[in-house]
Image 1 (tube, rainbow, N blue to C red):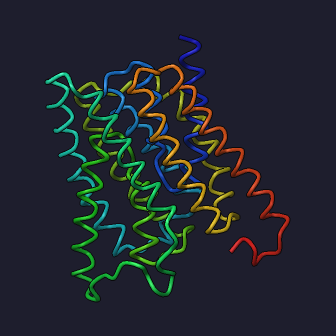
Image 2 (image 1 turned 90 degrees about the horizontal axis):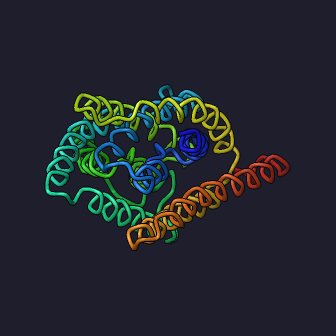
Length: 296
């Protein structure tokens, strides 16, 4: 029991740090840790979403995200994600009744992470002034697209136990033309709303591990404070490379766990998070010693 709580606390600290840095909820880390640790898939997903709501809130506060987020994007996405989360949760419950939930979550999460990671390895197509993905000029048309995107991301979130930031941040950078720092803050606002709703829905069915959440949340809040500060200092190109490494590494380790190497995969997930934390710290220190323009 003590060892499990220690692992949960360490995972919480790493999730908080990486969540606030990348604008994701930390589900890419917490869900695999819980699954590989033997939690049933619905309980792993429900626990992760409950934790993400707290972790994301910590990151959003540190980023002062609500004041800086474009409400025309954040509002429709958050609403769409709430609808999508419910659909994803219902799908997972149905799959669990058929005895296939753990494998389904693992495959879905690995595919999503790999796709996002490879996408972020490609050269940028747009910029803050010229987004790479065109959107309708009318507020109503753009809002409808963000609503639909939120539903799609929400389905994945409610099914696979991620906050959705791994998809939202790239979307906000490519389609909304936001700087990566602004995209991180806006993503965290959406993630908090959707994860809180998902966590409540899973908790109502008894699918949230309160002990795990209690062990992870305090350390996650501490990690989030440092992660938000580091995000503001690290350059966009380095941010993209670190984001891609996070996604691809986690996808590979999920496949390793599915192949039967559960212990090695669990250790690998924690080592990956620790390695990313160290890499971010190095970039942060380097940016602090560079002229202000170098970290822009």
